[in-house]
Image (cartoon, rainbow, N blue to C red; front, side):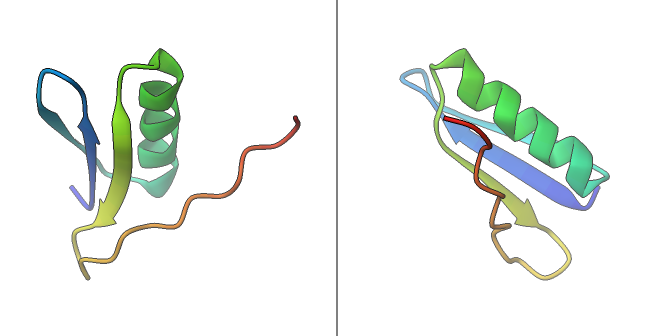
Length: 59
């Protein structure tokens, strides 16, 4: 698994893994849309960098 997704809530911290960047971006977006997770980050486990997500469209 190349991408690690972390998200915080009042209950604690959740960690998930995805093989593709597309999958990681989708899951991070879903977590934010739930409205209970904060500080959602995607980390590339091969080089340790935090992925800069594209800005949401519309608004």
